Amino acid sequence: MLNSLIEIPQPARYKIEELFKDKNFVVPVYQRKYSWNQQEIDDLWNDMSDLLDETRDNHFFGPIVTFRNNLKNQQEVIDGQQRMTTSQIFLAVLRDISKSMLRENTNLSDDSRDDLRDINRIITKLIRGENGQPDSLMVQQTTELRKETPLQEYFHAIVHGGPKNLPQKDDAIRNMDMAYSVLKKSVESLLKTKIHTIERIDLLSTLVDAFLDHFYVIMVSAPTQTDAFIIFETLNSRGKDLKASDIIKNHLMSMLQNDLDKADHDWQIIEDKLDGDSDRITRFIRAYWASKKSLVTEASLYRSLSKELNTARGAQQFLTDLIELVNVYDVLENPLKNKNNKMYFANHLVTEEIDILSRLHVSLYHPIVLALCLKKKNEIDTAKILKKVINVFIRHRTIINDGTNKLEPAFANIAQRIYKEELVTVTDINNILTAELLKTDSEILASWSVLSKDGGQRGQKKWTLVYLLSEIYQNISDFNYYDSAFIEDKYELVHIGNDSEVQEDMINRIGNWTIIEKGFKYSETDSKTERIIKLQKSHLTVNKQISGYLTKNEWNNEAIETRQKEYAKHITQLW
Image (tube, rainbow, N blue to C red; front, side):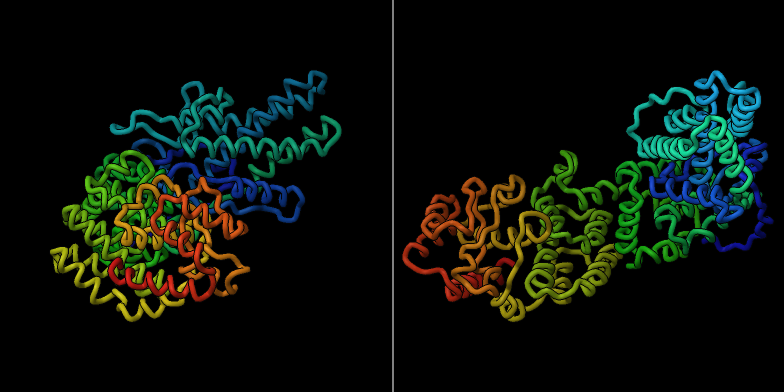
């Protein structure tokens, strides 16, 4: 938060009709787009229903913070644009229904027709934006760096009853369309509770009056952008409505007021790459912050960051770093999403290791990779460091099943030491990972001897076991299983022995699992002979060995323990 004192302007209470009556609002380019979902629209309708049922007299719709731009005769909306946008969409719904009723009911009395015309006239005056008048609310502006405004065009079409035929590729446009549709259906359903048209017109008039005269906001109109930013941060930094990334964005814009267009353009690069997902952007910023400064929770991220970023130069460097790293972060979360992500690293081992970690749902190491990228480490070294990270995780979590509460701060600390160049060479980094985090051979061998895994046909459990087995099989047969096991997903996990052959507590022991080609349709209910035939037909050397064993021997608890003990010879080499 900015380290300055401000005099907060006197808040003013406005009914919805008063809010839009003679003010021109504009949502600045750097604000987040319209994001209300159906739950929030339903909440609005429920609040309206309470007024109609007279369970309350008025409804507080929330705060609005603006910067009063006297040069442009506009109120720039710093906080509250979601409520304001929804308000105008709701007004458009009420107006469109009144027009439809007027058009479709030709036998109305003069009084009823006047009531419908009054609704149309009142709402049209509040929305404005026709016959040379400025819109009372603009949700998107053109700038030097943003020439097209599809969101504003779509919003204008909705609130002025025009054709809504723009492509709905943008989430904000889809949200607006959803809001209009849900509210329209809600109003129409309410009106259908009345039999006669005149009753429906009276109810519609009551609905309009309830929204315009009994919904109210508290607006703080700050004299400067700086004051508005500070008020926004004060209202939202401890709230639950906004993600940390939304508040951080506001803070950055407050630091970069002299070139907001460029700052917004830079932020848009990050937002576009991460699909406009505030959760992903927050995770990205948290990982970046952990790689340079400190590891904090998402709830504390804004507070930690705002203490450090208090100059325009610092804010711009922050954005520059994020732009530099956003592509690699997308790879960390989605290594195989598209061709660009698959080919981002020239060294295929880096991509493979990231993919494996991703399948195992491991993200704690992300700060290390971001720090390596910031320091321009070569990919050969990066691959070696990632292999050590995998070794640490497999020993610590997969085999011994210790919690990750120690790993995350340790990885962050190592990332910061890489960034500060306290750890420079791959040997330095891997030695620290080994000394501080790698479980000993004796520890993992003890856990391995009784290790069980649930397996599964999808998700983390599947890929954990597939990874363990494929690495061991590769070590035995010198065959690289990555493409066939992970990219092509050719194999399924199966038990060698079934519950009629082994005890219940032995079924999921590592020694009772193997992987086999999916085409063989191996089933644990198969007879022993059928299993022997399918294992023999498998291209995997290990499966042929299992088939040979089953031909001569029974499969039982002792066989599982023997196999698990044999594989123990490999795990200290592999990890």
